[in-house]
Image 1 (cartoon, one colour):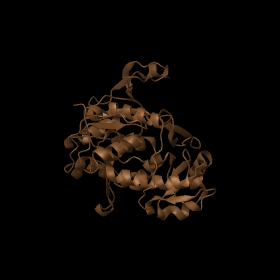
Image 2 (tube, one colour; image 1 turned 45 degrees about the vertical axis):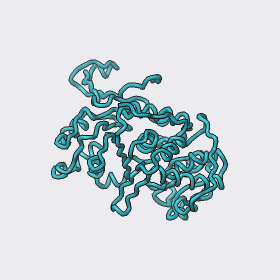
Image 3 (cartoon, helix red, strand yellow; image 1 turned 45 degrees about the horizontal axis):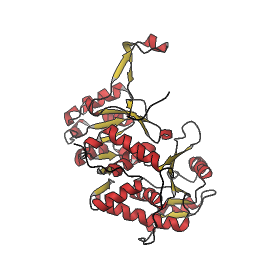
Image 4 (cartoon, one colour; image 1 turned 90 degrees about the vertical axis):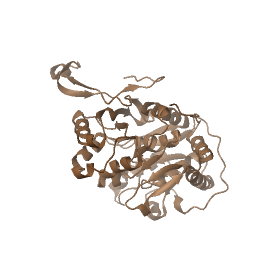
Length: 376
């Protein structure tokens, strides 16, 4: 069934629309170590927090200024990101350095030098430490702001920059990619179609991916707001400390779309006990996307075999390929059809020919979406 979806011009318009039409509907659910620390935000809650932060930003920065986001994964990060969008301030997702040691601060110092931010946004308990960073701009703690009544909505255009996505910096210092509001909306449309949310408006997205990374931010957080489907979030540390928590969240909240890099599936296969399987219901999980790392057939086979008893099948796997320079999504598989694999002849492969054989398995990364093409 196709849902009644109105294409927004910006993510600001998208959230405002949700807050006006379904203000009390749960937008985001953040899981934590204890139920007392877990947070549930409705569309109204998120819209109001974004307006409060936007008003403070407009009092301290100009349209088009940059603000670096330095938060643990959680509701303050999300509110600050939308606060930037609401203010017309360019968000720069990052993460707090592990310590005051120079090598832990190198990535952040590089981002500050390149982006030339007007502000660092964080929470009060981190503010003093961040203020000591070399050449740091003023620090604004978003969790101590009072409700705002003086926010002025900017006239955002599709070509205006929404945020700077810094690359992982795995081979060199991170480089910033300018993502416009138009880029963001266009890519969210691709993800929505690719995942099949346009045909399944009852989807539920579950994500543990870092919010400063494009896959976690654009696919895990912004897509559910864009499409108006519920989202369950947890921090990467919460998942890595006990991978079963990811699958428990999918089971408890009826997650239909969730995923991560190949290693996440390997971790679950290795560290989830047989007794835990009895408590898991993964029968609603329809899009188990794998991306950001090479997809390995042995990983998929092992996971599908182990969790078959929980209602999971290999047809639920979904290949996804993307990169920050393309906003995020470039190519993907087809919902419900799994990830095709081709075993090739090793000698032919060494000669740059892909011929069927009994050697390594080459995994499909899917296809591009309509009105888009991939040039190599």
